[in-house]
Length: 396
Image 1 (cartoon, rainbow, N blue to C red):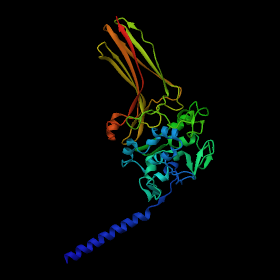
Image 2 (image 1 turned 90 degrees about the horizontal axis):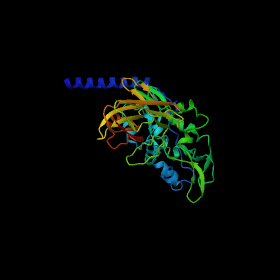
Image 3 (image 1 turned 120 degrees about the horizontal axis):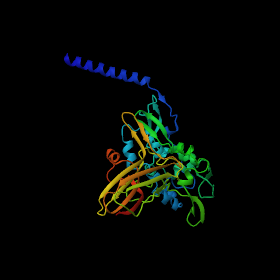
Image 4 (image 1 turned 120 degrees about the vertical axis):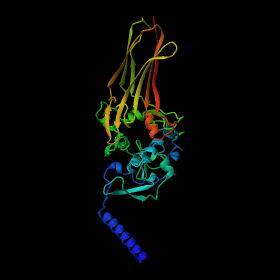
């Protein structure tokens, strides 16, 4: 009798759970994807005349382009260990990958909608066209140059594959599609890449754009053996901080550095008044820009004749954020185009001898604390020197 009671209770409990689940499911709605950043670029077939969509195969003919792209940030957009650490977090929604692997061909699952509009409940469907090798290439040739089974170019030159001339598509608007993603997903998660907005309100809008600086025009062979033509550099130089230790990456430096003069000698009791001006005179957007974790440091040190540090000071340019319990910007000292900032040091000279002042400016991808938090290891490149100079002087 006891067994029958227990079994009956179990059946009733299971029925209750099924009814509750059905009730919840009946209230669920599948919301369509409406924002551009929620969607991947639709599936692209292989254009006639090509063997595949892989950049490696494009490089068979376009050798210089391929070499340039290989060490670019774009090539590491998916394999970057920092990004991989970020998307493994429970707080990371699915759509972060749409800038890092923008093609449906590169994504293991296709997102068909959101349950009740919740970004953490995407409706997934296995992608029968998923290409792992293509995924590992991140932002590759196809990301920008293939649509509707054709190669898109700016000149429409004759080629052994189908080419469609569309310079408007390959304009700065394509760059801004990813480099101006500025959304507050929820109170703890924001995507704040405002480079496009910074350029639009800056002094170079209509005069220069992303391509002018980050894809400068050079004269070289598009295809080996077919003569030189004007084309664009495909390394997309920016911060110059590599994603892989040991790689050499091209760099663009938006800042100009202007130290004040320093005397060869001073008298005991004098005070050094030194100024160091930093000006954003080359970039059409703020510096730094993009990822809010980026920043610059400026170290000022005075060494005595025995190389002991007798004075040191550090200044910083960049944003500071609080990420929890709510994401909010605490400060922003990024430099807009053509603006400048001056750092100063004052040091009383109380002892005779020989000295030198050292200035060191560095770009940073993130802080050491963030590296440790994301468990990126000691070999992940996070900074690069951009300016270093010494000024010797003596005190009599």
